[in-house]
Length: 131
Image (cartoon, rainbow, N blue to C red; front, side, top):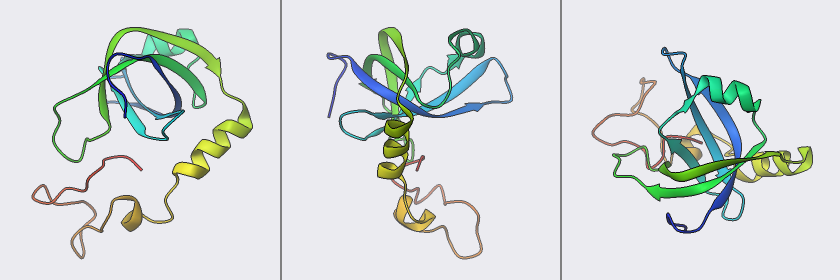
């Protein structure tokens, strides 16, 4: 595990815009542990565009655990400066995706929604929000 002290590198795997197009939600994989991280606060879309931020980008920074409710166990708060380190090699990006992929929704979320539902109940959320 890691804390807010030591900078870590994540490889960006996902970028998602919200209804507010000025915000971009990002998810990435910690290069050493393979842990999924969703940095908060969300990034400004102008910054993402300025950096040319795409899946496969390497970002370095300090992160602190946040008090969040399940299933958002991946959320981490940026602490201090963020450094864009460029793009990872294509073979490294593929390896990260393959290492963190799950063969099914049931395995990825450690269970399935109630029969006939397309979502998980608020009373019994999965342990993660991203797979």
